Image 1 (cartoon, one colour):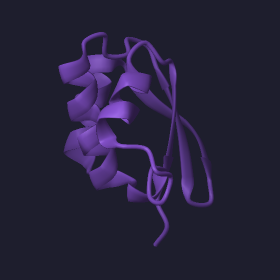
Image 2 (spheres, helix red, strand yellow):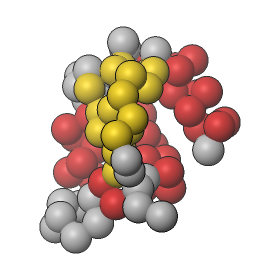
Image 3 (spheres, helix red, strand yellow):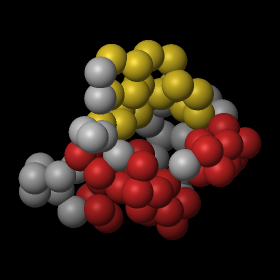
Image 4 (spheres, one colour):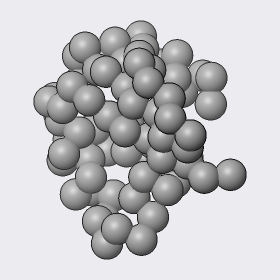
Length: 79
């Protein structure tokens, strides 16, 4: 988890700014622009915070499309 968070910071300038219970809000300085990079971020997001999309009916590729250019991210993971 630490390695993924470090990579997000180095690659995209992503930093956590708020933690509330099971939700972490991140600000992303340089969000992924291409779909392939966004897809890998979405895959890693599912490893770190599976409840972000669980039961939402949104496919991983659809979620990846929303990550392109987005400056805020919310990660949700229940114990």
